[in-house]
Structures are given as C-alpha cells and as structure tokens.
Length: 180
Image (tube, rainbow, N blue to C red):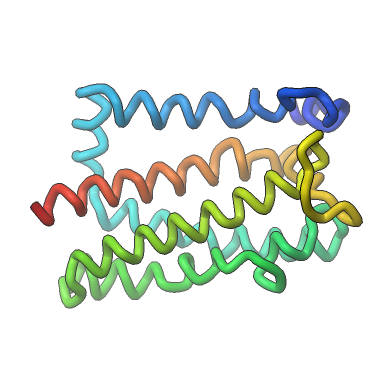
C-alpha cells in the first residue's frame, strides 16, 4: 500500500491510516504472548539469536542518518539528535559473545541490557511518532518524519521495529524464567 501512497496522501485523518501498517505486527506479538502455543514458540527460540537480531540497529541508524541528510526525517531521529539506539546495536556482539556464548556475564546483566535496549527502542519510536505529520505531531515541524510513510522505509515501523520489540520481549521472558 505504501507504493500507492496510501499512507502519505492523508496524514490528517484520525486515527491515522498508518495504524493499518503497525497494528497487524503488534497484534501478532500480543497473540504470541497470550496463547499457550505462542508462549511455547517464544520459549523455544534461541536466546543468542534473539540477541544477535539487534545488530540490525546499526544499519538502521545509518539509514536514518542518510534520510535526515536527505530531509525526510528530523535530526532528532538520528544518533546526532535524540536517538541512541545505535548503542544497543553496537553492544550486541559483546553481550552475545561474552554473555551468552562464553557465559562470562551474569544473566541479570543481560536482562538489564535488554531493558535498556528496549527503552532505547521505545525512545526512538515515541520521537518518530510525535515527529510524523499526523494530527498529534509534537516535534520536528520544520522537517517531519515523512520517510516511513513511503516504501521501502515503511518496513521500519511495519517489520523491523516490531521484530526488535518481539526479540526483546521474548528475551526478557526467557531471562526472567531462568532467574527464578
């Protein structure tokens, strides 16, 4: 639908059309965490793979910076602004290797890392939503977040962010279960 300008032709509607993009993956996450089969699936996922998944944050942050340079996202959505999400991506190899492969880092530290990385993700999501040209825009009026309304950048809120969110929630679930 982003190829047909469905999301960027009417940004003033309430609720925004953009919800069509993000509700399905969020609903999927809710179903996975609230059903027995879903929880069983989550618990079967390798924790190290869920952790390595966060490496995607490094190229995403580079793309966001490129989008800022091309005037389609505000600076506050980059590592030059309010977005420190790249730190989560940059620490993945350390956490995965020393924490999960070598088991030289306490699992509580890995749990704390997941909560911090989840907080960094929520920070950029909140800033991105409030910078988008919707009726409730609060930031970046001089350069709103318009990139995610267009393909292929619509994959960021529709797929990449929910996948990273799911990875953290699944990791936190597994880590809390092993700390009991």
